[in-house]
Length: 434
Image 1 (spheres, rainbow, N blue to C red):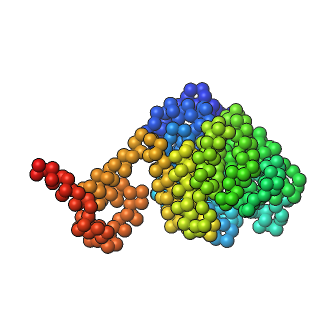
Image 2: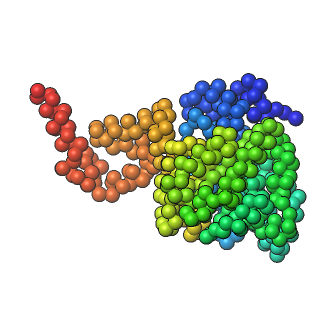
């Protein structure tokens, strides 16, 4: 069997794909290689896909952003999902995940996989349980073997990383039930596994057969994204025993996978109050041996449906500042409906803002260069450069031109009382007279 990405890194090899990923963010390829070898960086680049833009995630690198796309059984369109893919990539997503659950999921996954220039992730359990439920069968009737078959099917389709809820164990469920929660289990994969386990009286096969999963992912050199199936879905449930128990299990499984030459990321919460974010990040880094941390949000308040791209950006910026490596976007449609193309655009840009703000706060070399260039362009009233530097150039251009002719220097907010123009007269022209 060919050496995996980790094994090549541990042997001292710097591959072309490592060099390509390092060049994308102006870091030394040795940093990427050494991080992969230690498990603090993952290179999302399966042996099947070989995408145009391999993505490295982890210590010493810029904070990455993932965009979730995918259909549901109630609203399914291949072309709509491809349009979402285009929007996510155009507005700065470093990766995408296809979370399709409808009957056409194979076609959608195949089309996205063949078109995506960025690494692709999936959640195989969605299709497994979705197909069985659509066929009129109950959740406990799903054979354990079918779950593993689905993992291989996704790997063979060119998926680069797979969310697998391996830490949802019978012990963790026992802790959850004993302590109680306001909102129970909000992860689709976690809740389906919980029902399967409870009604069959068996352990989670993704946990009990983890070595089989390692073997499958190793064959395709795909990466584990160990899912947080017991993440908190409201502030009241944050940082409870079930969440922490799952995290401990994920840290143990990470070491087993790394030992077998398979890369691992760890997924994290969820809904978390601002005062608990730093603790959650530092705890994950300690328990999971510095593994790249991939967080959904975290969402910092439960009362903003329609605005959860903002609540998640607040939490995401804080999480990344404290050490999270990878932000999964949240769109304005969160908790309400299936996102459309506009939601994907807004969600991607909002998560990019959070990631960029954290990179600046972390002192990442070069992170503020674009901001400094924007300051100069504003000083010079260079609107075209301002648009080009913006995270969403079209939005900036459209807003500017809604109220002012294109030949005006100032905007309609201050007009002739423009502070920049006034300060130039006060400071620069005054200095010239002196």
